[in-house]
Length: 267
Image (tube, helix red, strand yellow):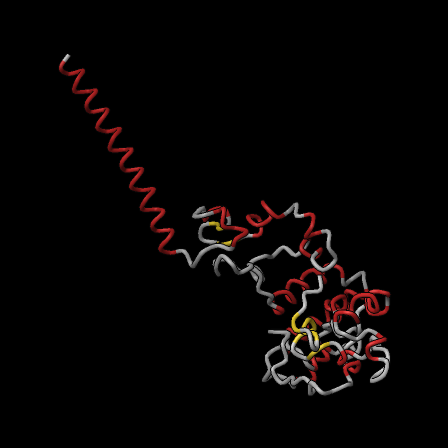
């Protein structure tokens, strides 16, 4: 009987020690993950918490297989023309960078990485499709000369066909032609050297085109009234406001900064 009690006591002790060891290991493992984590996940991935294996493969890192486990059936992503290329790109981490903070989207456009992915994809089609072969040669040339000190800037511009990807979102509505690289770089869209003409300028139409609503009844019924440009009010001084006369309603600080009114949330 005494021996049986000792066996039970031994089993309980071993069990208790095992549970404590597991708890300690789990806590230590969680603490270790917190210590080596490069930062918090974005809001969309925050639910994964400290489950690193959901995205990372030991000794390899983030893999396409891990990403597609959740995103392969992203119908909204694959059903839109600008993002449909994700269906066959087979590389995610070059442009999607995590652990930058909760409020930062894990998107970091890398034109070089995207050009390499595009070149690999086009090589499979270039032998049978002339357009693919032409685009492939353009990408390969640009990848070779992308370092500024190798060739002059004009050669880089000639090799890179920006319009091939950005024509659907041309905010200049064709007014500046198709050579995006004459003003923009592949690292950022902003143009540091750009200075807007004087607020007193009346030649806005050289760069800006009025939206479709300004050529409809909306212009007379809403836009003119908000800006105090109703025909009867301005007939004696300036005549009826026209859609191309941006300066009569807008200010150069922002399109929604209406002259004499201030910031106006239109919709």
